Length: 375
Image 1 (cartoon, rainbow, N blue to C red):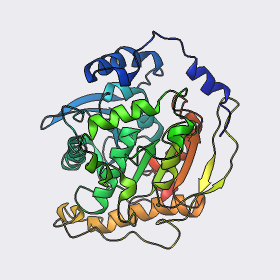
Image 2 (image 1 turned 135 degrees about the vertical axis):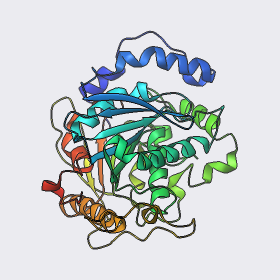
Image 3 (image 1 turned 45 degrees about the vertical axis):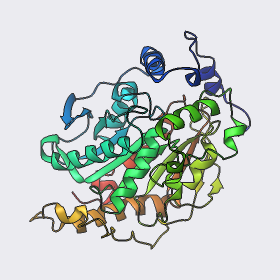
Image 4 (image 1 turned 60 degrees about the vertical axis):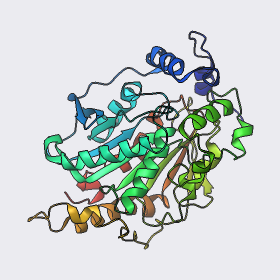
């Protein structure tokens, strides 16, 4: 992408109080600036059926029941907020959480995971994993189906979502059947060309990314750990299928397309849904191409989570139901779309409504009429 469309230009020109660049802030000042300003750029909050707050150990969670979500057995989304692992909270991303809850007729749960530098890597991962465990254990009380869970997040939250999906594949946490990664951080070495191509002038800067990373990963050796840089994982085989949404003018752009399958995508242009949006979709080959089934969860860390869940007398072993649900979602992405989907916004601040249909394909996985997924 070489030119911004009009909606992206408007986002850059958005009037607001001048702020100190984050790289010149203390973590406390950066957090306060963000909390003071996020409401100015949030969309109007959509009505939902119910908003709850719960605690899992020391982790606070916010919960939104979408207007079309069933009271029992609803699909669920674990949403991990962005903010460079240093700033942010469930409230700073409440607009997208409410939108996703209504868009998919689902229950969205967002944890207030611990932030750096007070709690550096891997504290945030531990909290997000604990939130997924809590969702599974409290599934009946929450009215969700523990075998129809998607993990999602933006930026730093996209990094955490990708890591949780890999942990789920390996049986270290409960299973997920899909992931939605919105301009995720996937390589903490920060050496891709987009870090120089979009170094400044497009919202998030290269200097800010370095500031965030240095607080989250003060030990340089840990930056190559796959849990910090999921691109470094040995294999992506068997991980849940992904919807990847990128910002075309963004320091993270170049590392994003490599994430779902670990290989470069083949591009297929598609016209945007309206004059104020610009997007492209990509087809890709990889671990979800037709006919290839997910590998079994690793046994290295004890019994996989599918063995710890109860057997349903009516629908059979949960491992069979989980495999069926994931295959249906993969089939929905692979046969109809050519693999995990990659979509591109011009900039981070643009709205996601242009991708409503694609988001529904992943988040609306509970709609048996369309996907065949087993309840």
